[in-house]
Amino acid sequence: MEQPPKHRIDSAGVRVWTISSVITALVLYLIAVGLIFAVQYWEWPSWLPPVAFGLVTVIMIPSVFFFPRLRWRYYRYEVSEKEVYLQSGFFFQSRTLIPMVRVQYVETEEGPLLRRYGLATLTIHTAGGESFTIPALPKAEAHQLRQQLHAWVRVDEDE
Image (cartoon, rainbow, N blue to C red; front, top):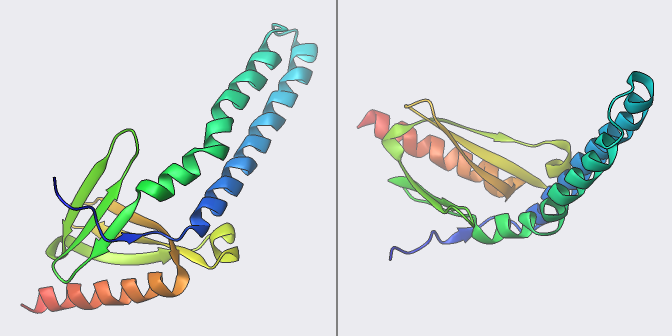
């Protein structure tokens, strides 16, 4: 069995993903509350709001309490001069090798939650039009990796 990549993403990513899931849950619960009024106004079936609340609860409990930690635990990455190696997934594991010669450009992104925790997401765009992300990296590390990948891609173009 091949070795997993060496590096893990920052554990603060768990907090970011948990907060993001809680925000999503609140929005979905607001929609479910809206269904209560819709049932009364448009005479929709009375079972609709309880089913909506139940579905939101069943979906959001693992999304808030389990999936962020699993995502952190099973996401790994490794970057070398020749390739980028990514591994992710708990139920369905994915291992991806991206040859440096296929990399077109690299960018970093920071949303409000990531910025609050000093994190960034690194996105690698390839010649085939695909994009691969390394989420929840410390901001300085993400910017350093972006610069390093850019330098390696330029070296490959010159050869």
